[in-house]
Length: 494
Ligand SMILES: Cc1cc2nc3c(=O)[nH]c(=O)nc-3n(C[C@H](O)[C@H](O)[C@H](O)COP(=O)(O)OP(=O)(O)OC[C@H]3O[C@@H](n4cnc5c(N)ncnc54)[C@H](O)[C@@H]3O)c2cc1C
Image 1: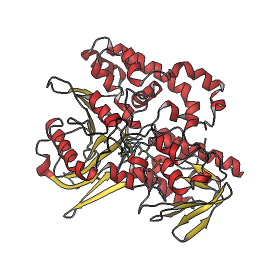
Image 2 (image 1 turned 45 degrees about the vertical axis):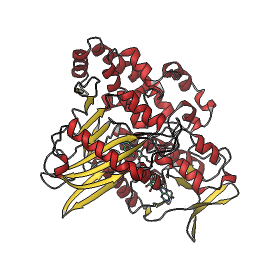
Image 3 (image 1 turned 135 degrees about the vertical axis):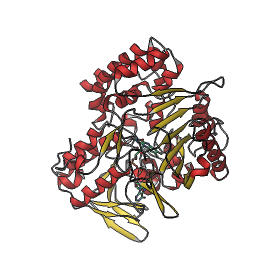
Image 4 (image 1 turned 180 degrees about the vertical axis):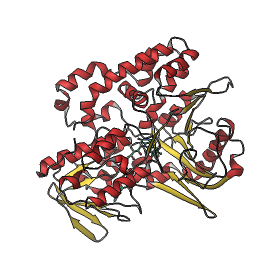
């Protein structure tokens, strides 16, 4: 959208049969009853970034997508040991109501919540210039903005340790720490600067686009076509063409096509490894790519269900053995007995996703990715593991989520395992991309203008700022503005 509206002639070459990537639509037909689901994202945050993108092409997002703000934002079921039922918290943007809810659990944690929000408002304000800029080297960080933010970021601290300095109650800490899972990371390892994630929820809200988040990528495709972009689906690129170090086009089987610039939106490390010969890649050798840390993966169940389901729009259960569950995922590479599970139940407010009176239920279980576990041993074999995890997920839906007759009511079931994500050209099936550890952030991620090449650009979760819809849109703004500047084409993307 940004490149086309700036005057570039743009062709999108998409491997799958539809646009959207991880943000695509999944459909199921159960004897004529049609269900639809988001494949990946269901939480839409910071809509103003996408609004900016539409606005810079002379459009209004509101004319292309219908957004509903959710209140409560989501229900938390925080598992507790000793066989006690989970602690329930319905999160809300009404900060005084939220603080009162937390104070009822632990008196000092109510005021601590308000302090946490105020501190992170300041932190995000300081970080915003960094999130909106290309960071190519330490020099880019040694600006006034970078210097000002450094003491606030406390890079040596984990997110969990930072939260422990505010909150006394363990469950309340987890209520503000689980968001590290948006990056596919453990809160015990995730850098404390990501305390902006829970803050962003409470500050800007969580939104449901009618039809699901996939309606946003479809809306963007519509806007692209209006702007003259040609979109070709079922067209997997299998190599890039080079003249010296200049990327001059793409190759698909025996077809080659030349372009002045190529922007890679594929999973960055997968694309580096599979589309560019290693001898040209400079620092990004296979060895370096393989030795990077990657996010977790997910096991997905998309269920077409008969009748209504009495659950809020978003419900997140955190395992009663949360630390063990996180270590199973991040270190040992195994499935937990009591896995954390997230369920999205959009049908009550969105009749477009299921037949009248029925429900489309989205179930996500965080899992290890498909690489060799850090703790040793082989990665999980998903052909044998999938039925076990499916069984555990149903057990959680019955026992924890209280849908005790779920199995009888399922009309359609579509599963996606980490091995399936990997076969979608996602390196190690790591659904949230390269981990956002300090050695893999900022200038240490692959750059928007890929280092060592001309005419070759990156956009999406593999580059700066990282994974998640709002930030991949920020990366699009950065890449488009750098490319247009270099190509001498006018842009209004910022
Ligand atoms: C299960 C799940 C839940 C998530 N939940 C949320 C959420 O609630 N909120 C949120 O903000 N984010 C969420 N995310 C993260 C978000 O989906 C990603 O950050 C984002 O979609 C990544 O976008 P991308 O453009 O980098 O990659 P992708 O969406 O993967 O797009 C890459 C595109 O490139 C195509 N491609 C790849 N290789 C080739 C090739 N060789 N030739 C042609 N085309 C190719 C792919 O088919 C795909 O269409 C979730 C992700 C997952 C998987």
